[in-house]
Length: 327
Image (cartoon, one colour):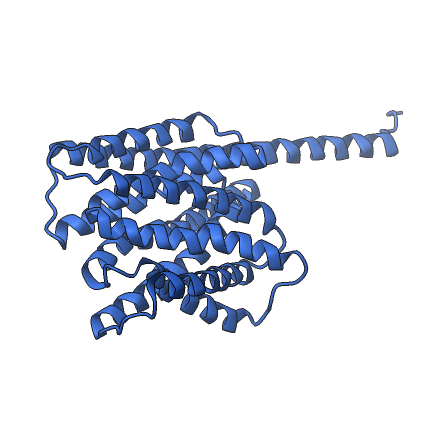
């Protein structure tokens, strides 16, 4: 009875962590539509500053802790990879490519995250996550090279670059953040990334242009929802879930972008693009399947360990208190 209860609780916790982590790619998938429709098109660097710095300062006010020791330089490294360079590239990609295509290319992140986790943390991907990543890659290729869409290859190249540097940054964050509160490390990265972008934006693009009400609301959404809340959810998932599973959840990013681009921006999708999106969703499903298999395996190992412990305890009792022969 207790074992079954523990199993149900473990599965409930895992499903909760999966749902929480899924907030991040869904929110990120909306950034392409918001950026393309509501934000200025000539301020990629300032766009990164306005997105990262307010989010980081809000989280820093909540946690009220500054980095210590090696976390000063680690925050700079992670802030550059995960925030500064990544945000600037994503902003540029969102202005170059249609929302649906820009979001769909991000499905490559699943494979990148698996590769980085294998190289840097020894997390060898298992069969189902690899198949899921393969379906994601194939779905992306089908959607990107749909004959109905005009593809800017510079946008594709910038998108792939963004995926590479963020994949490296995410795994380094997972490797370095053990024992540190997630709220703290997220705040430090966001502040560091925003501060690094600030002088670069000033030198390259000059002073920021005045923002109208629409742009202020757009940046407010990106900063609070698609950055502060999303990165907290994402880093929480990286800490408690396998990197391969988190990477496959990232496939929800392109699905969200495609849906919003189609419904709100009147972007048309043909049968080929819809088929690609179905393959991406299949990859996400395999991520859930892999996680369920892992939970069941963990439960089985725990049950075996419990039985072995009981057998050992029984043996020790028999040795300590041998049965008396009947007279």
